[in-house]
Amino acid sequence: MSSRTTMLLGVGAVAAMIGTMSVVALWPHIVSSAATATACSLNAADLGTFVDIPGGGFVMGVGALYPEEGPPRRVFVSPFRLQAHEVTNSQFAAFVAETGYVTEAERNGGSARFQESDTPEVFRSWWSLDPNAIWRRPDGAGSDLAGRELHPVVHVTLNDARAYAAWAGGRIPTEVEWEYAARLGLSDPMDPESGVRAPDGTPRANIWTGLFPVLNTRRDGFAGTAPVGCYPPGRTGAYDMIGNVWEWTDSPFAPSLPRFTIKGGSYLCGENYCRRYRVAARESFEADFGTAHIGFRIVRDVVGTEGLR
Figure 1: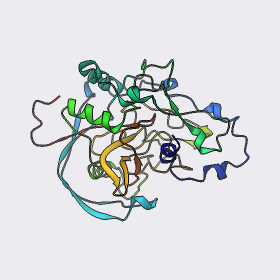
Figure 2: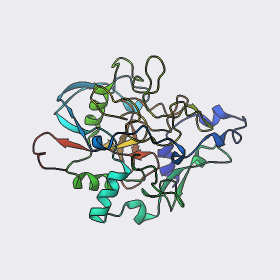
Figure 3: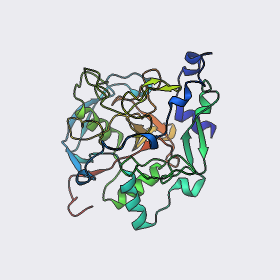
Figure 4: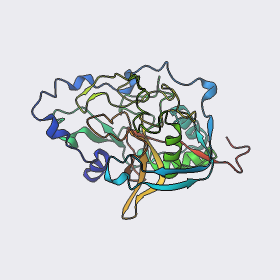
């Protein structure tokens, strides 16, 4: 678990920043996604809809904050269709009911969950491998999907996501496609953080608000995952391209690293840590391992999609 935990957390100086402050007293402000509201999600009629992403060119990696995000380069993209929201628990449940699919977390001993800690200044203590954490029990033993049917499915690996996508008549987007669509959706292309908040400070995404990892103010309305579609869509009509959960892409992260790229940041990215709630941001993860903050959405090619689900 140690190498995977390191990749999960990335590189930061949170422990030094926290120092000797009384963090244990603040930790109860962190609550599970089960305690968040669910009234702001999409209408049932809009579930599973796709938006058209036109072909074109863009500069990938603009506004790089971390070294792995650059250098900027010109990329051209063919048109495709993008599911307007992250795949939900209800959608994944339909897939499992029809196919009998068993996820890798169910077969291989669980998944990673963010957890309370008596030593939050030690970043390795933020996560644990929970044998009871699977897609239908997102918070481990005793949890279920009641009230979270429209939350993004989590604890799914890239391999699980590929299996769902094939069943649903689509595929997992490449990193280039994902970033292109996310960039087209920005309300202000000149502001890399315009996907997070409006000029007046109104939240546009579900991220960590407050001091990570000890205080989540829930200024954006949520401490864990949010139902899909709780925030206004981007200019493409797609929701939650930034924040909520990281999203799998089908692109290797680097030639020398046997991991795949995830994009968009999550509800655990804050201003003081993991500022990867930007379209250029990227992180890597193993294809056969899932967590509480990674989900996915699917795409379809423009040609030959008639009659698909």
